[in-house]
Image 1 (cartoon, rainbow, N blue to C red):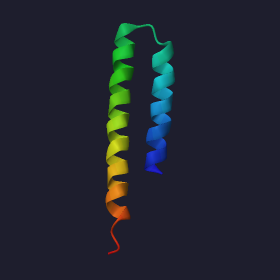
Image 2: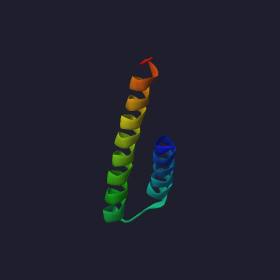
Image 3: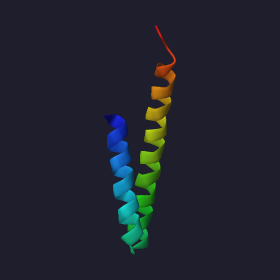
Image 4: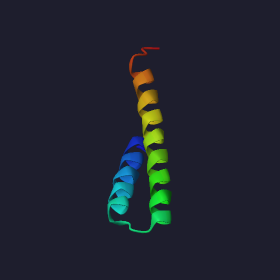
Length: 55
């Protein structure tokens, strides 16, 4: 579920970035996009860690 939310946010920020002309707002969107990508990578890493465990 968390993965889905991050993917949706990334898609939204990419769309906003493509149409944004204000440099200050572009910087904010770029920062938000980078954060969402990092969070998605963290979630995917956690998912990969738990897949191999039979515990």
